[in-house]
Image (cartoon, rainbow, N blue to C red; front, top):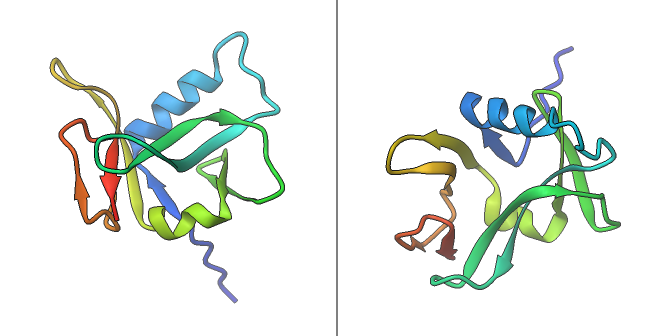
Amino acid sequence: METTITTPVILTAGAVAQIRKLMGEENFDATQSLRIGVKGGGCSGMTYVLGFDHRQDNDEAFSIEGIPCIMNKAHEMYLYGMQVDWQDGLNNRGFVFKNPNAASTCGCGTSFAV
């Protein structure tokens, strides 16, 4: 019997490589997981959260290519199916969010409305 485990978000190969690089830093706290979420604010109403944090009671834990991830259960409806990519170009450097749930996004690419 085959078991398929779906994760709420997708990390591209570039994002995985950059996150692993950050996790390999000398003073990285290995007790933390990658938090993927949202918070109120930004020019379109909500802003993406991507950073390392400790698991809270209302978090769902999952793993993407061996990277421990956490997400507040209430955020999944905003983020399900979102792709996180890493851009390393001359004009753009950083994580980029492609969210199929966003009704609109702003020019900065880190804020959205649902």
